[in-house]
Length: 191
Image (cartoon, rainbow, N blue to C red; front, side, top):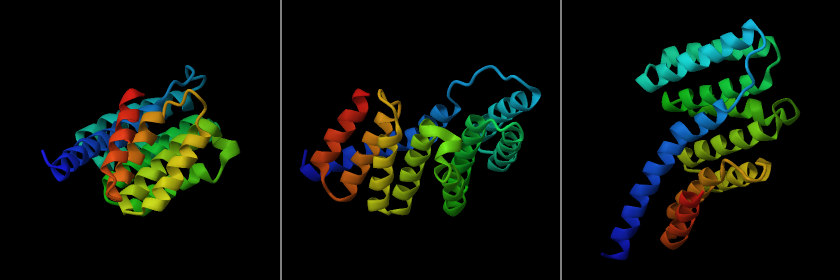
């Protein structure tokens, strides 16, 4: 097998892996563990997030957007910033899937602009999502910057280690460095 053929195979593997992480990994992380809801607004936000996730999985982006917007409003009404950040990250995923990268970026930037409100774990998830959005835009330096920010914000052991390693593997492939991509992909697989 030629070096170029191996590189294409690696690229195909990484794109499938990064796509899975982008669609499932970060949303799953963002949905994380949340204490049992203490009031009806939190229960409503959690229920809306779950229904929206099913809408998203079915490909009904408009319904998913409406449900996540409802979840965001419910979470904000009781100042549950973890639930609000979850809804914002999920909205970013919907906007990205709908081909609205600027809207997706705005959702993520809301979290990144308020580190004391949303906390380090959500800052890390938002930075990882922003890195994926920048990668989609083709801005490799920005994607690398935000993957570094995700790594810095994530407490050890970091649940985003595989996401960050896969991002770096995709970036290595973009610059034509198949060897570095394989090393990073291996790191991602280990985590």
